[in-house]
Amino acid sequence: MTTLLLLACAVKHSISGQVLDRNGEPVERANVALAPGGVEIVTDDSGHFLIDYLRDDEGTRVKLSRRTEYQAEIFKVGFHAETTSFFFKRGELVLEPVTLTEDTIRVDTSSVDIDPDKYPDRAQDAGGSYEGE
Image (cartoon, rainbow, N blue to C red):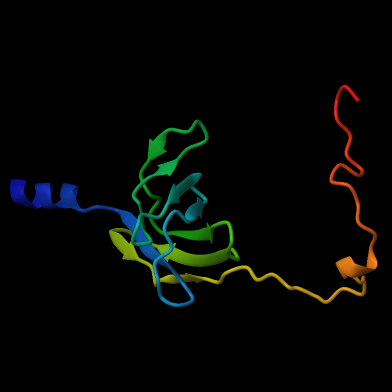
């Protein structure tokens, strides 16, 4: 009976997963925010994260709520944010890997002619304003 009680207490309740880029490489230091729960953590060097607690309204750590629908938002500067929803019953839940896509920058051609040969030679301080002048 004592062994069964110890095993029941040893069951860990957690949500874990991994964040990858579109090439399948781990994304380190990505933010993972869990709602409801008020928890925001950062992925490790291999893109993994582990959430084993929540925060109540006062900010105190509390156990993961059983039989609850959660939503995780994963974001990092330079990537598009991703959101995943899942149902947590109890025990250890390992989420499918989340893939972040890099932000892209669009460059358009300009109609302005910036050929330096078409502009007169200017002094280095042209347009500059310095204190004390």
